[in-house]
Image 1 (spheres, one colour):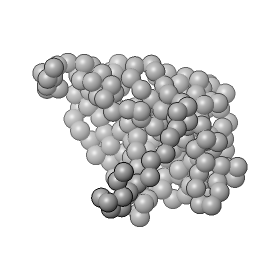
Image 2 (cartoon, helix red, strand yellow):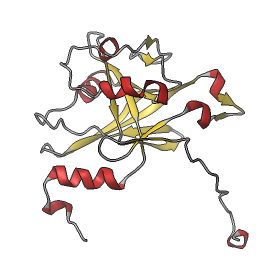
Image 3 (cartoon, helix red, strand yellow):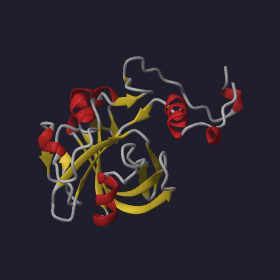
Image 4 (tube, one colour):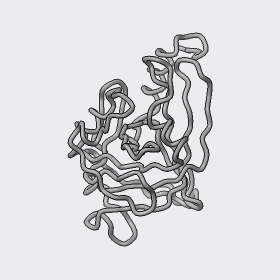
Length: 209
């Protein structure tokens, strides 16, 4: 079957996208508005870009209900700061509840029983329940259309990485202790540690078995 995204409704194209690009890590993004009110929302179009400078990105789509920018993007454009909190299994339900479209002035931390923790280099708070945080300043933002199904690419420069001491050893984060959660298609998530396996990255063709 050959499907042309330009020839189907955007919702059908979206289903093809999320059913093809997986599993996807989740950026649980905390921001603040200009008055200091906190906002918290998950995004599963999220990845790293490079290490020097350390850049990460996530892609908030326009809201499906009214086609407007999501509160997270509005806050980042105005304040130029945000925190990406890595999602672990033990607060995945609270994370999912933060995807509800609350009114702009609603604090998702308070609504969903999550704890604010002061960040080291930016104003938006970290999610205390998260074990890894990337404190970011806005590096760039690109917009791709203003029609339903369109979105933006938010690029953040990481100013500080906070890792729980129990996870960090010899310069590495212990994935099994972190227990990260990934997003699949629809309402399905995955445990990133369930069937872990290792593959040595080879340097020369003759190393192949």
